[in-house]
Length: 406
Image 1 (cartoon, helix red, strand yellow):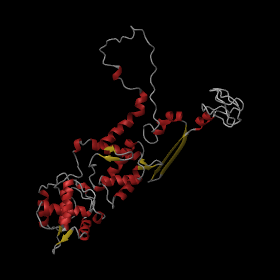
Image 2: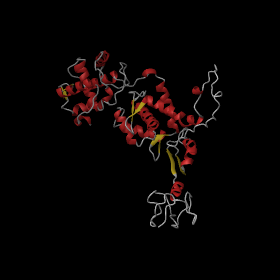
Image 3: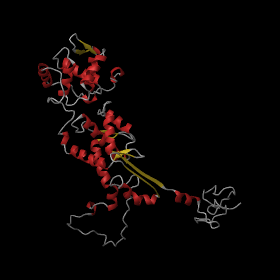
Image 4: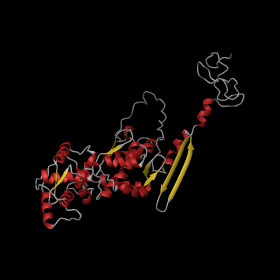
């Protein structure tokens, strides 16, 4: 039995490490005893096990881009040690954006301490100069590590906030889109940009974006996937980590964010704001009906804090329109579909459903809509109670599957 070079405990010949102090005492290659505090075996030259592991650890780096329209593809792979990553971070960041690659940001190094001076030399001189050590700019390394990134993250946090570990939600209700398509496209680009800035990594998948659009009510089953596909081909980049903006996407988001920041307190074009200005919708109502509709639109309607953006399908929009006309405004006992639809599109700038969808929803939901002999519709007591519960709560919330899928 031999003794441990470090703690003098008896060594078991079966092991390469001391059972008492856990230090390596024998070479893992030739099994001979090692010399204390040396990093290699002096018999065969084998490094200590801990040294071999440290030397073999590398960080994998992969960047892959795919673009359409004239096709472009780029694949970059690399292996770096921990020390090399810190030096290469800025270079690697230039392939995606002009900022350091997370999570390896250059560490701030404390400046060398000045030698201690005598008591007389330590007394600071009184000066009227405005420069003060506390007011000087931070060291260059600090700015390089966080300057641009923290600025962009701050801008993103004005529009979105983090919700949970891997989710962001918008703080605003309008994305300044002047059409339903543009509203959805602007949400997609802002969400992808803000997610990366706030959470610290790309959006995991398309499904994440679609679910976010549903929560903020800029989703419809007929158009959102098509708009997403068109936009993703031109402005998004798919990588192993997820989805992020390509160069053109970053250029576009800068313009959108600047436009939204340039509207103080939300002034400017407000997508969901009520208006009495007629939209470009085609109408099947005659001139007399149009005058009647305009009179309904001009009448103020009290819906409290109810958010019309929570209406998610044609049946809900139809219930809200008929309730507004027949119950809240009390200007008719029943209403035809074209007039109900025209009232919606004039009172609320853009409605994400078409007139035929509204008509089909009213025709199929007999437990919520009743029809007179001349083709006008009114709400059943059940439907009236549902709408009034929305108004009271300020939102639609969860609804029954019998008409939610319409």
